[in-house]
Image (tube, rainbow, N blue to C red; front, side, top):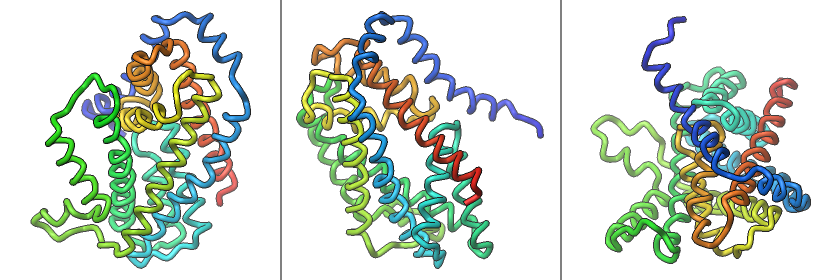
Length: 290
């Protein structure tokens, strides 16, 4: 198979996160970083790891609703296993390998399922995730000590758009000339509630990591800025958010007097905890061929 220059360039973007991480590591005191890691509390990390179960269950249940809109009827257990495989591999690999695994696994169980239909259920699922995450980001612009100030009218407009997308994620497709490829789902309330619950679980996992590293900030301050950290971590320039996550954590929490070494410890633990746990679970499921 011939690899084109465009494919090489797109893949090289993932190296930017690693370069950022290397740069940050050259700017900190390793002894101070090690001191923070050595004094980590274990029980918050363990609890954060255990919360991966309800988080993934909520995401899988919501995706199952989207699949049912196309007549793709899988059991909750089957959907959960497929979602865990895709989510795990998507976390530890570059590109969109996790999404491709989801499509492959659905068609393996239900050969009559159309590839494009499964693809659009994944798009719908992503829209819900990103929209609700952006809704959680907005308080930071209104109440947080943000270095970047956006006009009030723009924040209101973005808030309205986010609420509209949260209620109807297919809204953008209504403005396309071609036939809308995504089926309209009527269980908006349930999908939105699941999305909010999942986002709250993710925030709780982050708060627990902050507590494990003994960062001297309140839960409110973590909940205020962590959604923005998560959004930046989703940028396709790193693997599992390494580099971008640590840089944004340092940027947002430095005004609170938190040392860069302590925020580096938080970022690395978040990445390693989610990276190792998700990768391990995904590898086990694939090995078992469930």
